[in-house]
Image (tube, rainbow, N blue to C red; front, side, top):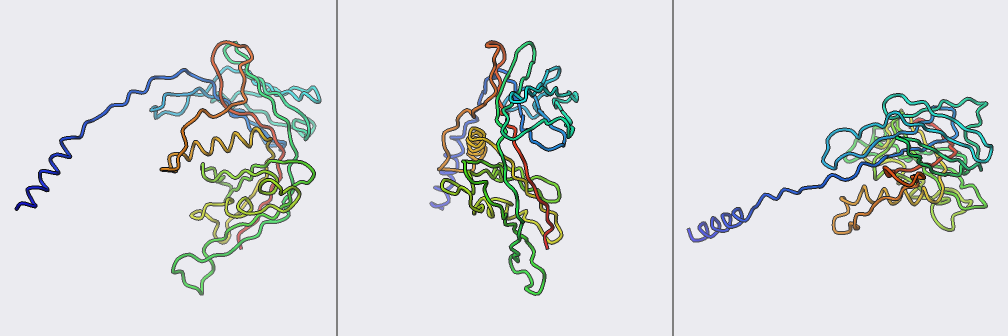
Length: 291
């Protein structure tokens, strides 16, 4: 009875100390968000414009309508005007004769919204080629050893372009669906870090980072890998963004939250500020089937 009494007293004490704390988050200023990752493919190129929303808002960020979006090739002195779709996307469908994206050229993105001019610069860097994609077949758990392997983990065989420092975003797709989770972003310097210029891509970028274990391809799945060239600033931006998105999962090892950098500049000097990123890069890709 004495133990029961002490336990009841302890529970009552703990529950009586509970207070409901309401956290009031002040509404921040509205910012223009620019998502502009373009490439040298002949597919539709899209610049997405939105406004920031309140932290606790459950709605999608509001699209920006009525803006003017122009891409200028500063090397060739050509301009390309993007067409709005009414939902915050500004599109351009390139033709082979357009020469929209040329390796080595420098590009300027201009966004004019509510009388304010926003600008960003990016040089289109080279990419490399993909030799092949191999698979490491693995069975899972207590699977019957007489059956076909359950998971097919891809291995990228490609050599970094030699002679200069290169940066890449390696994108993986299964049956056309992009692995776009915050922990699935796969960027690398040269073939996998400092001192890897001109060699074949190495793990983890060439193997462990290509697909998450739980969603690795199975037999018959189409697996596509794209190597998209980025510049050093974009590489640093993506790494910082990835750290901030995964910070909550780091527990005791989490870093202090910080504002993510942006290369979108308000050149008017007054009015709404902007965040986001502009990069234009070259791509190479290959598709194989797990077998």
